[in-house]
Length: 397
Image (cartoon, rainbow, N blue to C red; front, side, top):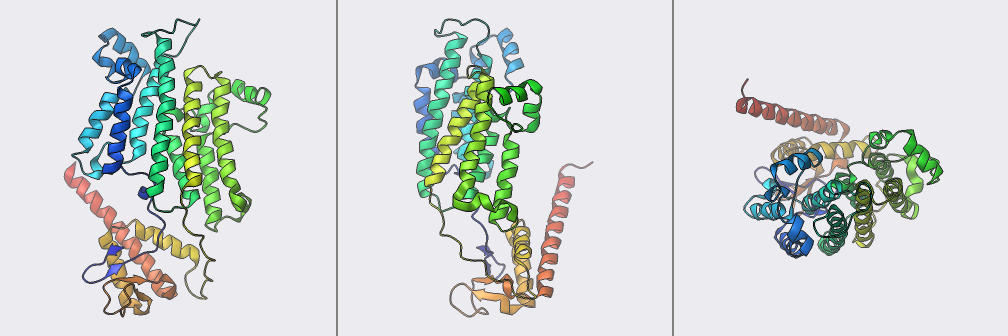
């Protein structure tokens, strides 16, 4: 619900807020993250190579070479420091606002070690201090980290509110796309730059007759499935039967990873990154398949003749969600004046005396509904103007 100025409360019907699914770093989650992090820091390879910045032990010449290859240095000590700083910050100023923010920094550590210590030339002895030793242990730590993180996700899913599986899958795909391990598999240009050799390899060795995919193209496909689920795109109806889309999503993402694994023979850093990306995706997908879902929606109510269409109501709600609570209340107050019959109490009292009411969009006539759109657009425009004014005052020309 949104506070309504003076005596009313405005409640817009909406989808589940994404932050309830994104695993915010609340106190209990942060404690579990600390425990997991400390367990990793006690492991011997971490004590030797991952608990402190590389610059803490390396000389200037080494660091010049290191920073030529590694553009985002990270270590477990820095992750710990960020977590400690977050304990004194408000939620919107934390380094790690969500669990996935923390995970991305840890993955960056393993990825950096894989890239910089990638085996080159003839095999070398796998002993402490050698690139092969660091490379192999970074890969093992990455796998162990994803397994521990998946356990945490499963526990958090038990406490999270029910959420549509398709929304969870879209959030998972967004997490996969932002993972440091996915850097070379996100866009079409990532595989295009490998040239005809890569496409020929997939066709001849992997028996892939179609064009290679990337995470962006999979994201576009899943958006189409979402539109069909929302009733906007009848062309994708087949994917919703028996949740066929879920199996297809897994097939597409796994294929992107397997293509990279095969092309890089699994040993090189690019292949290892693909391996760990696949691990993380499959583990999270398992938790999605067992997570609680809301009850099925009933059939959509028939559209009232002369009233707003379903698409128009959805668009208005989207516009309202982008407004501040105060601006939402201003729109609601104006609607209450122009169409009092649309007010419905939430506490069983008469609409005129109730402190908690909702506006039923179906009860608005076409003229008042159009007025609501105008009001929402006007408030949004004024908000932008105020933001620009604040910016000019803060940074005068």
